[in-house]
Amino acid sequence: MTLLTSPLHDRHVALGAKLADFGGWQMPIEYPGGGVLREHTAVRERVGIFDVSHLGKALVRGPGAADFVNACFTNDLRKVAPPKAQYTMCCDEATGGVVDDLIQYVHSDDEVFLVPNAANTAEVVRRLKAVAPQGIEITDQHQDYAIIAVQGPKSFEVVEALGLPTDLEYMSFTTATWQGREVIVLRSGYTGEKGFELVPKWDDAPALWDALVEAMEPYDGLPCGLGARDTLRTEMGYPLHGNDLSMDITPNMARAGWAVGWKKDAFWGKDALEKQKAAKDYRLTWGLLATGRGIPRAHNEVKDADGKVIGEVTSGTMSPTLKKGIALALLDRTVGEGDEVVVDVRGRELPMTVVKPPFVQTETA
Image 1: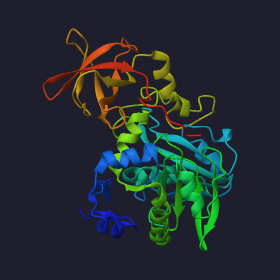
Image 2: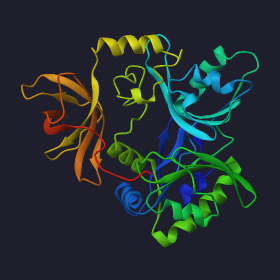
Image 3: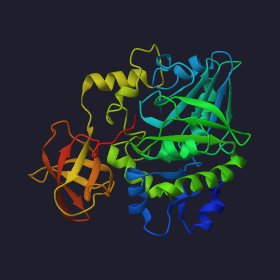
C-alpha cells in the first residue's frame, strides 16, 4: 500500500525524521538529536510544533447542520456557541462502541467542521452520509487543509510572533489571515500544555511551518514527532482511539461520560450506553504508575497480589517527565485508587500502583 504524505513531508525528510505509518499516512515519529525525550521535554518546558495533517477533515453544511451533527455524536453542541470547538465521539448505534473520537468546530448553525482520526475519517463520513437529510451536505476535505499544533508554555509567544491572534478562550477558534493566507486558530491541543492548533490550506502549510520554526528559535523550540505526542498525551491520561477507545471500549468504560450529552433526546448508541451505565458491569479505565523498573505496553495483563488477572493495559510508556513507567488500563470494578497490582511485561512482573490520571500537572488555560 502506498502511504499518503502530508504537505510538510519534504520538511520532515530534510530534517532526517524517522517516518512511520499512521493511519495510512507516512508521518514523523521523531527527529535526530535527542528524539522523543528531547522533543517531549521541549513541549513541557518551552515549545514544540507537530505536523498532524494526517488527521481527517470533513465539512457538514446545510440548514440545521449543527442540529444534525448533535443528533449523531455524543457531546451536546447546544452547550457551545460559535465559534467554539468541542470534543465528541461517534458511537455505534447498536453497541455504543466508539467508532472514533473527534473535534467538531461549530462555525454556525449551518456549518460544522469535523476533525476525526486519520484512519476513521472515511467511516465517520460514510455513517453521516447514510442518514443525512435532504439539504445537508457532507464533504471529505482530508487533503484540503493541514494541521500544525503549537504546544508548550511559550506557544503564545510563538503564535504572536506570526501576528496571529492568541486572545482566545480554551476550545475557542477564529479565522485569521497570515501573509494573505487564511488560517483557523484554535486554542487546543493533545499535550496538556498551553497551545494552539493552526489549520491552514494544504498548500499554505510549508510556509507556515517554516515561519513557526523561525519563531521558535529564541525559545529553543523544536519540531516534534508523533512519538512525543504519544508520551505527552499518555502523561495526561488522554485516550488514543484504537487503544483506550474502540468498538470494544465504550465512553463509559473509558470514563469519557463527561463528553456525552446524556440529557439529549438522541445520539448514536444512546440506548446501549444508558443500559450499560445502569448495569455497572463493565471494566473502568485507571492509571498505573510503576514502582519498579520497567515499561508497560498495550495488551499486557494486569494481575492482583494473588496472581488473578484483573485487567489489561490499553496504553503504556515510559514517562519522560517522571522517569517511571506509566499506563492506562481497563480494570475490574473491584480495583480502587491506591491498590497495588502487577503488570506482566513479557513474563516479568512489574509492580504498579493504581492512580487517577493525569500523571503530571500542567496549565492548559
